[in-house]
Structures are given as C-alpha cells and as structure tokens.
Image (cartoon, rainbow, N blue to C red; front, side, top):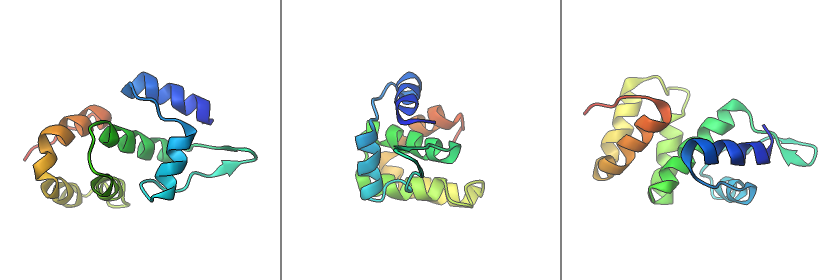
Length: 114
C-alpha cells in the first residue's frame, strides 16, 4: 500500500489524518516498526497497516506515547494470540481502561472482559 492509499484508508476507517510525516515521526521515536521502502516511497505491508491503525487509535484518544509503545508492542508481539499477554497489558492500563478498551474493541472487533 502506498502512503496516499494508507492516508485515505485510515481516514475512512478511523476518521483520523495520518500523514507520511507522522509515520516517520512514529518510526523515529520507536512507536512503530520501520516501514520497508520501495524506491522513493514506503511500501506498507498488512502488518505495518495493523500496527499503524493501533497506534493511530491510541494516539487519537491521547494516550501518552510511552503507553502507546508498550501496548502496541505487547498486543502485536509474536504472542499476540496469548490471552495472558493481552490480559497483562490491559491490566497494566487499568487507569486508561474506559478510553482504551472501547478503542481496541472497535479497531479489532474484539470483546475484552475484565
């Protein structure tokens, strides 16, 4: 997926504007994994899009960047299907649960119970 396609996709799905500049910023501060490049532009793979969707969702609800980084890395780790990993992450975010849980449920279609 090319940068402009990603921008349109995220705007349609999440109602947020995420520019290529924002993606570069998120890469530079370690919020997301580096996106592979193809010649002169980024080439967004499905895994990159999911990571950017989650980051944009959490950023939209104004979570602190360090919390976003932890949530993204924990939820999208190789153990992402491990309920303990997800539960531990969400328990850590208990102070934010009324903001983050609906956002994650909406993004992924998951239903999270405590």
